[in-house]
Length: 477
Image (spheres, rainbow, N blue to C red):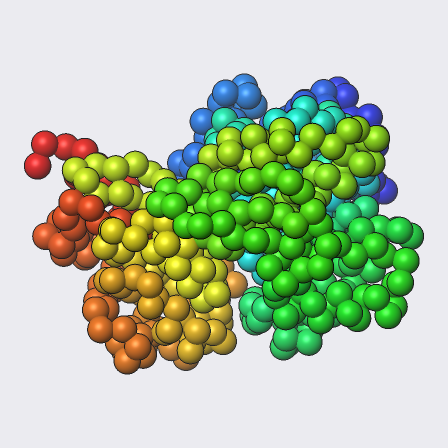
């Protein structure tokens, strides 16, 4: 096998993506395309929002996997973590070729080594923080590129933005320590909590992964961390002992310094705040105190980049750019209002982020009845965070639960969706259970009424019931 290094100049090189429809894979394909590479690939025939993106970019891809799909000349292979020689015919064929093969996170890491790179890390909040930072990067016309794990409104619904090759802002994932492939100059640490217990041994194992990641930064690297989160604070303290050269920049309500958050009076439909170091008001058109935390981190990053560029700080322009943030796909995503019912969708799959999302919605829309449809993702996560899941819906008026959405890495567990339902009933007085999402359709058509807010939450496929209901209420019923 040839040396696994991507050259700085990939213009004219053919990069083939196996699993190209994945959000990160499509984003990476678009970035490589913008750098002059020839890009093609393959994936399943299942349709995703990325199909339209790939088609608009005129990237040729095959639906269905076969060794015959592989072009005659390929310089590099990038594959989704979901595929290996054991479950994919193309991967099996590629293993016999003498060309470099990169898993997605390896290719992302290679790309990060070619620019001044900023990694966004944390158990949750990564996508929104990266989305806001990328929106500001674009708004301020800074010479950089952004890669996000979701479609972003400011990027035309795409997951990447290419506005130059000097700076790179990317969402980086702790699962299986994937972020250790990244080459960060700056890291944002949003939070650390127990998660991914199918891989990590315990909380200490998770914490050690983040410490290893931060330790990758060069001398004088910058850590922007959330002072409101215990896990982030603990890691900050430990890093200061082993790497006193790292510059630490706190943000949050409890932060000292420029990025201390002061929340302004609540106004329906607005998320207003100030930062202690700037004589400027900030406002977000999306709900949630946790979104303000993400915004403060993004502002700290953009200010740091502007200082790196030697540019005059235009905080009012940053404030204007923040107002333009239209959210990202599946992160408190507003799907529209039909017959007086506001439909939303959120990817939240951890109790802390679910509780924060619902609390934000309650404050943002105080006069709406909130109906939350949740599908838990993976048996191991549900079991490890069982108590949290059963108590995180207090800001919803009505809760509907379903079976647990399994993953390729586990098909069953010691608990199931009904187990979670039985426990949640002890903490909430209006909970319902429908094993299959389609079984809840008629229930919803009788339940939902004008001024309701209906939100699907989770990393499973229950978002589909939201789409079915939108189609129903759009029609003449």
